[in-house]
Length: 179
Image 1 (cartoon, helix red, strand yellow):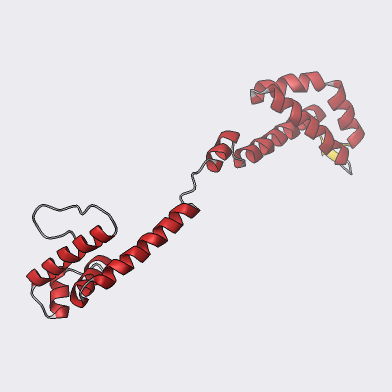
Image 2 (cartoon, rainbow, N blue to C red):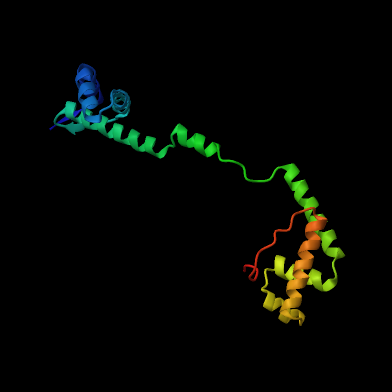
C-alpha cells in the first residue's frame, strides 16, 4: 500500500468522473443522488490533510461516494415531506372563536339565573345529579328524601331550565337515567 495524498485523489476523481458517475448511478438507482454524492466526495477530498494508505484510489473514491450518498439518504428520511408538512399545517383549530365564547358565557349566566329561581332542594338535586354526576340513590340518601322525590325534583328542574334557556327538553322513554 502506498500513501495517497489529496492531489492524487483529486486527479483520479477528475480523470474517471464519468466512470464513477455511471457506476454510482447504477448502484444507487438515482443519477441526481450520484451527482450530489460525487460533488460532496470532491469536497471531502479537498478537506483531507494528510496522506492515507490506499491500494486503489478509484475504489476508495467510489466507497467514499457511496458513504456520502448513504448519509444523504438518512438525512432526507429524517425530514418530513412537503405533503406531511402541509397536512400538519391544515390541522383544524378546535378552540372556540370569540363569538362562541361569548355565547357560552351568556348560556352559563342564563342557567345560573334559572337555577336561582328554583326551590332550594330542586336546585340541590340538579347540581348533584347534573354537575356532580351523583346517582339518584346517593342524592336521595344525602338529602334524606325518597328516590321518587329526587326524580320529580330533577325532572322539574330540567324542565324549568330548558324553558328559561329556550331549549327543547328531550324526554327519555322509561328506565333510570344513564350513569
